[in-house]
Length: 476
Image 1: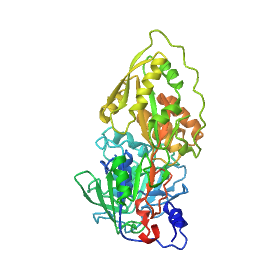
Image 2: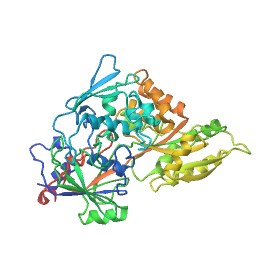
Image 3: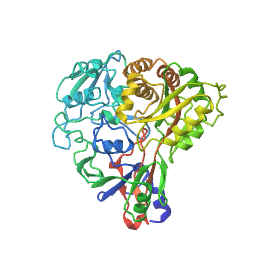
Image 4: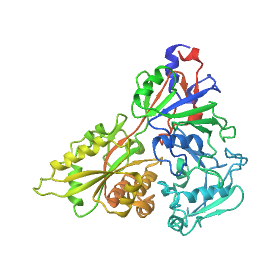
């Protein structure tokens, strides 16, 4: 096979390969910005953790490359009862977890409740928030959702507090994956099972023969964290098949994944209006350029353009800056104290706000401390990135409300689904939670010649089970 054909196949989905049969066997090496740290799908939030969760776990419903829903662990898509206040879910028979235990309706009920369990501390509780009994579980007054009724080994009924037509699509989000009640959080029903973790944090995964869509093409996958310099060397030596990180290393074909991490400024306190006006005068295009070496775009509204099915917005001049006062407010700017957060953005905002009479001191906080401050409302200004796992604008508005304003804000957003256009609902959420959208950022998937089947899902995920490699003679 000639080089031109191999290059065309490199990033092709399986459906476009014509008569070329997929190839089973071999191992894949995948490089991430950091090694996966959290394998519990209910807690996974970073890009590396979500890649691992997607490989290890399976959801009740799936979204195909076109955005259409299809059954995952279910035998058929969820069936709504008249009025839309309840749904019937039927599991496919014969499903097994990695440890050999059967996948049951009781496991589904337990997994849904975990999303709201305060001991789990999931950032994805919005998925189950419309289910009856969600407040009792979220507040620690119950361990099970009263609205989830197990009817048999394979059937359950889910009753809601309010109509939620997007429930099937919410059940396709990776954090809603089903876990065994008695197993560890890394035991799932996904295309790969955990085979080991090395001292450097890298994961070794092995193909799971019982995966509901059939065995993965690769025998195994290694997920490792690599910095840009190490990755470039590994690619040059042919030691990495796929890299999922912001920058595209030299010598690899790359495609942009949807920019689905949005960064917002949250504004509170007595100076909120002045600070908001100052923020709105900042050039968001400049912030997007500083944000990452990967795909980035300024945000004109609450939701990233990738979720709205729109191209990146044209750059528009920022509004005129408010007149600077001699003695403006002095505030703390809370930011995540993590290696992945672009400190250049907070530094630039510090300068720009000072130019407009708002003096801020940047205060980095660890994730738990930052979450506690945001939940208490005891702050004036904070920067918060939100990584979206929803695959529709309506759900994304609810997800943003939950991340930025908590359960009460998400409930108000849920009530708007079906009554407002997505853009209108998103604007209402932004006003409700006091958020000023700044920019959206994403990752790039870079593959070596010979890797086939890379077709990013609408939520930006990569299904490692769909990847296979051409024989060496065809990949040259």
